[in-house]
Length: 485
Ligand SMILES: Cc1ncc(COP(=O)(O)O)c(C=O)c1O
Image (cartoon, rainbow, N blue to C red; front, side, top):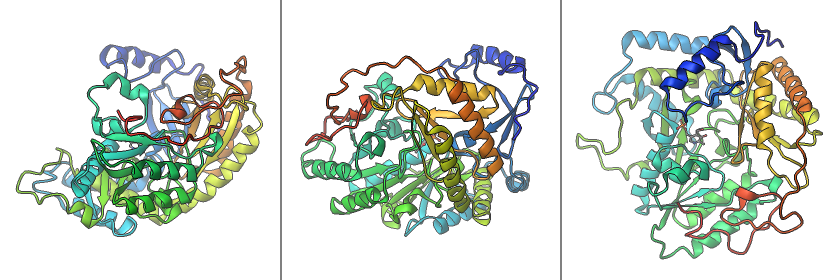
């Protein structure tokens, strides 16, 4: 593999210049700018990105798990070119277009079980909003149980169910008070699936009289931004069972995990669970803002028929260019059997990474499912204290050597690899070599004695925030007032 570059230094002069201009015109929270970061992309093809200085990078992110078919695939170019000649904007919820109907039918064919009616939207967060509103209408109950470490987007409804204090605290007072967060399995940190299910069941048993009675369970089958956390299949089966017993809507947020990423078409397929509502986005179009919430007819029929004024819609709903791209993406995904490829390639790469990196004193675990792989970095293995600083250094060190990657997890200490599902063996092997080089050449930080070592770290509602050693669930770990925002 060659990440051959003209670069003397990354970012190069043109990227630096653009960064200076950007600083003057973009709100400063949006783009992180430093001496080493970012590079400005000019073009991309397959798994490769070229920046404005002519440097080439192997993209291990799939640009946020979107470019599953690789960047700029011919099938999508053709679909865009064909559609753009006809219509690229219409009146989605008033005078719709045929390509929207085609896509809705394709989603019905693709989705598991009886999931067959969709609400289209633009971003992942909007698909989550559609699911939350549908569940509210279908159950008559506003309360939602989401999960610790979960990420569902940044709009106010989606942020309410997201579990990130750093994203939420600045906006307290404008977020809802109808969501609580329940423990999510994490085998490395000793949070077992059955304990999570027991704690949820216990909470629901004693939830009568809540100000916001619970109507829905919202879960990522595997957490992506939460640090690639992969529960055993019986966790989701247990949630399905609990949802049935307590008459709750089960919402699967598959915006990260859907459409082949995990080695099956959907993350829920690993446990043969059919949710009531399922959200997709990201890889649906391979690069156009289009998302969907797909539901059962029963759930979706909770919405009133439109009387000429839809009570939930948006200007770009069912954008024809996006629909054409989604149709072409889904066709390609299936024709090239990319889910199967992700399973096989991901398995092999995970083993290779475990071999190359597993022995490093800061690598607590290399885990993954399909082509969604996480490398958890810690200050030392006995305490598992997160090392976000090292993760940051590896991300910038890799950029210097021609690899684009991201770190995730609530402590930002999990290197997260979600390359195009078309990445080649050679490219993966080259990436492993660079990752090992960068990690092994990173100076090890002074080992910090972690406070409380030797004591028991309780897993309460806020347990994961400060988790440093395998915790034990206390008798009551989910309280109506605990993680609610
Ligand atoms: C599971 C999940 N849900 C929702 C979202 C939000 O999607 P968007 O950024 O398109 O709003 C994301 C984004 O990373 C996600 O991973």
